[in-house]
Amino acid sequence: MKKYSFTWSNIENEYKSLLENGYIVITCEEFVKIKKNLPSKVVVNRIDIDFSIKKVIYLLDIFDKLNIKGTFFVRLHAPEYNPFSFENYRVLKRLLNSGHELGYHSEIVDQSIIWGEETEDCLKRDLKVLGNMFNYKVKSVASHGGNTGFNNLDFWKSNKPKDFGLLYEGYDKEPEYNLFQEAFYISDSEWTQWKCYNKGILVDNDRRSPSEHLKDEHQLIHLLIHPDTYFNNHFYE
Ligand SMILES: [Zn+2]
Image 1: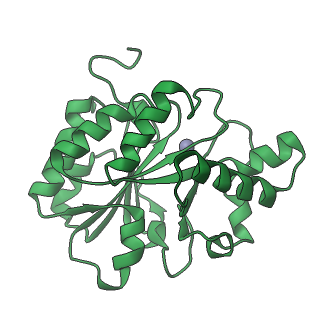
Image 2: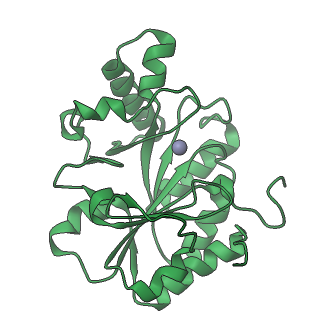
């Protein structure tokens, strides 16, 4: 099988073929709102900003062109970027002004261990800080998987998003969301190849791109991509 090339033009074509095949592309927040009356072909469009906010510009251009929205999750403690830098703040503001959802890409367990602070306090402060930065209410959290060896998802084993004024956490199992367990999940998180999970269970060695899954006619697709993965000519540009 030919190796998939993670270029901007290829990811644009992935979205294009989903749309051409009758899928509607929605944010995670919209999913919560219409979950009870879900149309027959839906893609929930999630984007984790792990290392580069600047690369988000390419995605905003693609989404504008195709007239679709996504849910982006931004980190606040990344050594790789400062969301308040001149250019990054400008990009995030454009993202919000274009009607996309901006949630918090949480590292609260990492923070609590590194700083010796309560996880709950870290979460509350981060939601407040992000909300204040852009003068909006942060409604969602997704946990980042970093290199500390700790799992930021652990907090949600014993806590519920709604207790923090949130609509959902990216992998939560509350009936109002429960997206990972109910959808066909396709992700680029392995950088150089796609992977997928059917209703929470890994599909072994299935490296097909989103458009290559079209023939299976999944009713609900949960797509997770990272801007960091894509390029024009090569990964290191
Ligand atoms: Zn992440």
